[in-house]
Length: 518
Image 1 (cartoon, rainbow, N blue to C red):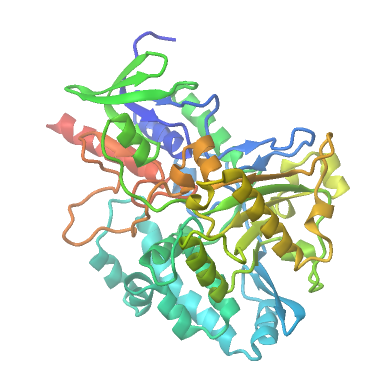
Image 2 (cartoon, rainbow, N blue to C red):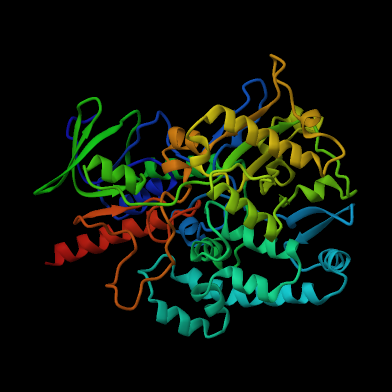
């Protein structure tokens, strides 16, 4: 390895966005290096053998893909494949003490229509559902093509959408249209969940609107897909491409400080090495960047999701009689009625563990079994990933382990209310006799992968546009020249998207082009 640690661009953090940025820069002939504090690259986009006694590599933190633009995959010639799911979601419920459920297929189907009819007593709610998402798609199809361009203005996008749905989704709290448009508490809740994944908010806060928009605009369709081979496959492909393009990696390299100097930036590491660069990209949280530069960190909402990873020896049967291979094929919602989401938010915001914790789950192996060994597939093993809503980091501050235990127990008990087979009886067993289940609180997620207070978006989300009065930008700029955010904390950051990585690289190339012309 060369002792010359000077680069045109340094990237702090080797998550997928940092890798995307490095590939675009290296393709343009820029000398670039990534500094990663952990021993492996990937950040939240890793696949890991969570349960050592079983050959199963789970997408431990991030697990589905929607926002990654096809153009990035094409530009970087990545052999990365995502698989469509035939089922979008299933929501079990008990109507008049009779187990039932609403199965929503990815494409319109008689099954979905008949479930709406059975649960709502007519076809009015189904038609409202279809009309609502047809209107939302107008926004998605306008915004999606702008995600890899400089930020458009609010007025530009509004004019292109040219429909009342803009006012309902962008200008007014999403709770208003849900309450005015839908009658069913269950249906309202299914819609609202897309505004709450990663966002601790009331339905009448625009924070929920912002989250909802990002969940519905991916590639213009908003479809959430399964990464073939697990999320770590994306990192593997990106690392291979970056390596081929000449990007240098420094793993086990923790940045201790960032100092602006006349020629750019000087980086000091915890093992007293120094790196220099003209441009610096921060693929870490803005709060971490502020700490490294001895600046005041930005205020932000805290993370509100507790995550549970499970390995099953069999799928549980449901009390409703729905085939579990259909029920768990999409996103499995439970206790996510609109009223339940609102009450859970109010209770947790007051410092109380919700009486019923809204949650949703996803089974990777029903779409892609390649993350399991052949023997495990043949034996009927599956994985389940659970995301609990409205479990903010503050709940865990006083007595972390006790709170974590209470919430885990509550979630499993609530889930069992919809199952014929208790989930504990379906879990795989480790060699020591323990069950194959792993729970991660927001505080543990922060400690392990650097998400501030467990916030998967690093900070509060922004709308994917700039105000008319604001100057043109890529949404990655900071107060410091030649220093750009290339992670989830950028405008249009968040999720497994590569968008801030692309846009930070574009900002560098734009600035460098101007500098060379000058």
